[in-house]
Length: 82
Image 1 (tube, rainbow, N blue to C red):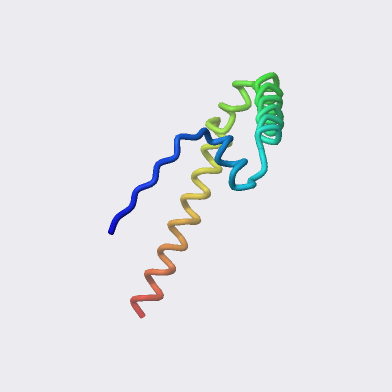
Image 2 (cartoon, rainbow, N blue to C red; image 1 turned 60 degrees about the vertical axis):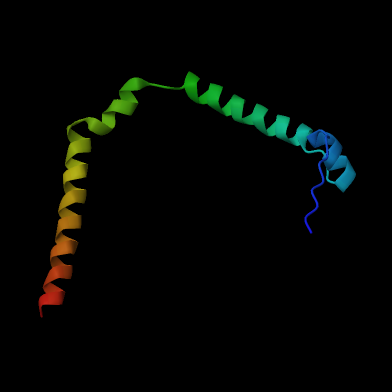
């Protein structure tokens, strides 16, 4: 036997029927805080700081990271050969 039941109610009505709390005020507050942080971050945005990672110093840093990774991979391979 198969029984299907449909309810035509809104999400708010379902929450109230199940006794769940209304979190809409909390949701609105969190979104407002996120908006404030985004606006604050945009006001301090400096494209030159963003691009500085790609400067000569940033490239040297990336080369050092690559060398460290290659070195650790080479050590791992040497350990397996012996």
